[in-house]
Image (cartoon, rainbow, N blue to C red):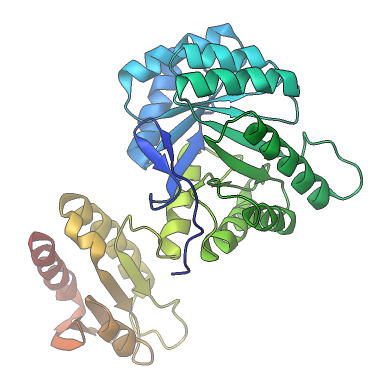
Length: 352
């Protein structure tokens, strides 16, 4: 793992962002904030999926009334998302919000100063959410974004406010990554990473995986949100996948399986799919399994070698499978019995 960028530590409700705190997972609700029951249902689902900080859109005073309802029902921190009307930020803080996201591109500095004063008095952190669609744009998006962000950071510091997280989002991977790299060199505030307006489908996911992944791999980033035109649950799942792929956090067992080719002599695709579902189900009952590296291999080329590197694994050829544990061959079993043998042994790991 690369050395993580040194930052301040910001407290958001019961979650810390920055310094030595785990890189946290955020998302944003996608139903009207004033639709209480619909929102509660979605928040419950997001928490179950793995969201650790939840942002809600605040459009008016009706939305403000939702904040104490959420705070009473859930322990997860909530962030109010504020644009244009600075008073909504003040009302949010009055209502008990854990953090306020402000867009400095559409809020006057005199109004931003009022927000800073109240946030400092209430000890409520902010996110300075710089967005390419809102900054004063001249001719070079990257340069303009960095200059604008730098000026607002200095404005906050000049007003004796330091309790904030920074995001610098655009729909473009290169511009976003370079913006974070630039600002990382001039301050020690925690970063909220994301690619905004990424869209949906494979390209959208790729933008977030590459953009967020590049920065995290350089030790830059303290909390993340994958922004997709998809369900917020899917955003959370992709965030978890990014963090686990970079070995920053662990959410499930590491399962290695070969891509299959003409050399594969068994129905590995079906075996891998079935085994994965059962492994994940078993890991919920026995969390110790999440620490394992598991190999499901289908031929004699990569199979035995990869399986030997795993804590437990199988390698198949013909109608027989070999069971390995930490590089040691436990035995050879017919295809029809390997599943029972494997999961019996895996469950024993989970009970240790």
